[in-house]
Length: 439
Image 1 (cartoon, helix red, strand yellow):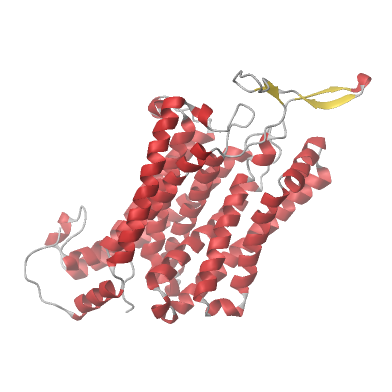
Image 2 (image 1 turned 180 degrees about the horizontal axis):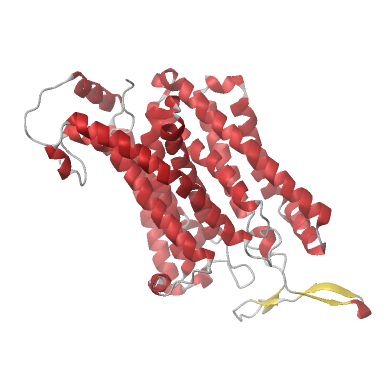
């Protein structure tokens, strides 16, 4: 709550006031309203799914992960990248990015909430989620994913909290900061700097772990050749650094606006180079993975590659060419001074990364791992069909492939994390100062 007591107006107060006036809340109110609509529509649709069951989706026994898990992996990656940016400023003294550490931590926290929310609709019986706490199977990477996501959510919140403490002290408001009333502003600023670095030391390895464990959920499935590769965890991290930094860059660009673009141009250039460099690493890992699949691959691996470049070639091209455009452009000199093109590059990258997450599903679930070889009668690597789990007239009971595409119900429910992330970020930007003035 804002204090009603009379306080002396300082130059810093004037700077904060001018900052708030330069960023009127009307646009943020529109963003909040838009996010609220996304949340309402997705939650109502989720209620319909809870009542009807997962049969309203287009997932089946033969294709058990789809849009929900792809969206979950998308937000986990962005969340990991956000805190990597924030932590790097304190640990490696990247002073150019210091004005955006609060935005980076906020984006990481919001995206962690979005990832956690997205996993719930995929569970079906979400009312039984308590069993993972009461009866955890520590041999399952899913349990470790829950642990690191929960830990990451706490760390990202603490990162935001300690960075905002000085402003809350000056403004006489904030959240869970009653203990600051007995301390001076100088003491609070010292505590904020000290704990921001401490949280960064903890946060950086957890940020790497959150996406490593998520990648291991896929990579440890030996029956799926498209996933079962040691390259997947480091590749996930490289994509996380690229997409997470791009989100921080996008939020910063939209929040600063064209009028103040030149003031933070060096910071934007640095973030663009981080995105481009991370994408170079990603493409190296992707190329090595494809080469090994092709060079030493068994017929099952070649089947996966035929799906990647054949049936799903357009989606795979989206995954490759859009991030490649962003990488090349962000390395160019023109990216220094183009506000609109930086926004376009980030947007194209997000589309490409989302296609990357969907391409985790398509080839894997359409290369049936159960096979039978009968050389004597000319049958080799015949795939056992999988029961669909339903019996309806006109639909096959057993299939060896499934043409998955999300239903309208799935697509609507998948708006849940987008609405939640946008709402949390917009509300925080509207309520507190996430872009402190330069010293």
